[in-house]
Length: 289
Image 1 (cartoon, rainbow, N blue to C red):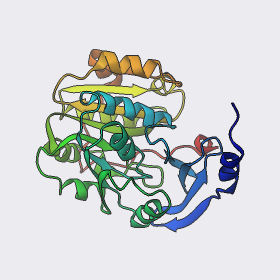
Image 2 (image 1 turned 180 degrees about the horizontal axis):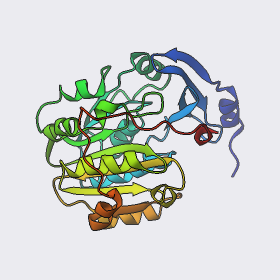
Image 3 (image 1 turned 180 degrees about the vertical axis):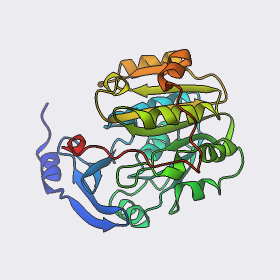
């Protein structure tokens, strides 16, 4: 059945919004296929997609993979206490609020201008228990009480690169401090051949967490192209079999590496400390074309 004329008019009337924020030019582009959905771009790089009518809908591949991790972090529908490092358009905070009602969440987003833009144009559900703090991710994490979080999600990019101070063992010490026993850490990482950054991040997490898994497109893992990988870490065994099933059945299937195969993938990379940390590599221009 086709869309109603009023729905088509609503989409046609929606116009892009552009505003300079601390991190560059932020643009909100209406999704012509979904009536109240928007894509956030920063300096032309896609950051988030939000459907205000259906916040449980995740459009971007990497966000769906983080969604799988969130779904498996606790029994279905059970509220969680979550910290989001990097806000974007608050896509994953909205997802948790929709799929796990009564969850309590903190979002730490350094770009105060972006926070204001998203709050104004894409308002959060007033009933959602989401607190947004404009602060550096690591500084904001330091204010989270010991053992408060059941889930910490890191999705922080500045100029399409993860800042160096969010790639170290010292940063992961702060993550571990905030996590409750059995709590899950998930990080969105981006890298391309020769995957030195990704291997270093796995080694860094392995130095601080006993259980790891990596979810990524097979072509990215083979070093064939630049892309995202989701690193999952915990002090308890992870639901690897179910995560593997969900990742494989996604519209853009991904592979899950863990155990010995993940250790072999690191190729002897050393953990990264604050003293040696560098930002993740910049993506090639072709990634966003």
